[in-house]
Length: 379
Image 1 (cartoon, rainbow, N blue to C red):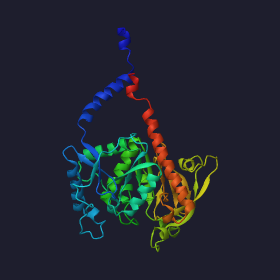
Image 2 (spheres, rainbow, N blue to C red; image 1 turned 120 degrees about the horizontal axis):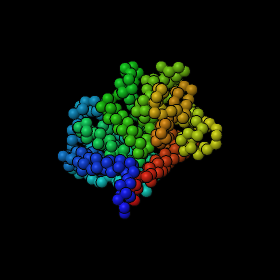
Image 3 (cartoon, one colour; image 1 turned 90 degrees about the vertical axis):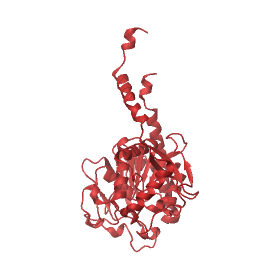
Image 4 (cartoon, rainbow, N blue to C red; image 1 turned 135 degrees about the vertical axis):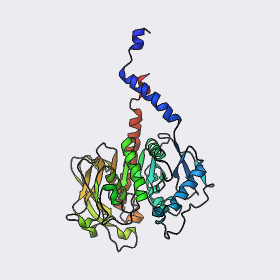
């Protein structure tokens, strides 16, 4: 090879080489690592985080101590004087490595818990959600409530980075209201807020969206969480909206989810990701019947990173799609099986949406991994 040819290195090569040199020290001194802990065979598989100074057992004990020392989180328990415990001692159970992204034929999926019982074998809600995503082709794991408790700010950012790099799909689920301080409002109508939980979950959603490696999917509260992460706000109660009619969206006299839900039609935008997941490829808007279990609604803001793709006249935004095509959220609950929704047609449609978002997330990550990388430039 001639000297002139050796010197003919493009600026892209130089940038890649410089980036690699800068990344090596960071990779060598990674502050945190992820692992999976499952207390019993019936318990969800929890994605735990440990610093470089902790063993996995110490990390679980640290997390439990932090929950029990936090009055905000402990107030989720039936009796706030109780201590939260997993089913078995943290030294027992199953310890597993978290699979690498792309190492499974299924879509590696992280579901964010927002209630303490979501992390236990008795958490029927989380069990239902995990079964729905498993049936849709996902390989689901659970991120504990405020999973970064006790970590330094630097380690918390490393934890968020690891989640964004490892998972194809991040799911934020239904639950209680988000503290209005996180979308710039005073608390007026919001109920049962937990600032510690909301701050941690919102930080993770924002970090995941910012890295743009995987797909975000939000359901009900998760739909609102994704909206806040994108720069939008919330109507704290449908009663404060023009034309808002809370009674159309939540039956407070219901004894269970089936009775509490109400039903209405939504208008789905033609050509949207939601329309495509429903296999509607024609150039017409789509009207579908959905369930409803909410008293708040998204208030779109100029400059937000997502836009409405489904609406209803008395609740406003019923679905959001990220402007970069890497997020989708619904105000309704597509994960409800027929024995909960009581509506076989809706549950079949919901299962179709879940299969679609799981497959879309897998395809998106594979497409990104096939994109040209720095190593390709040196071949």
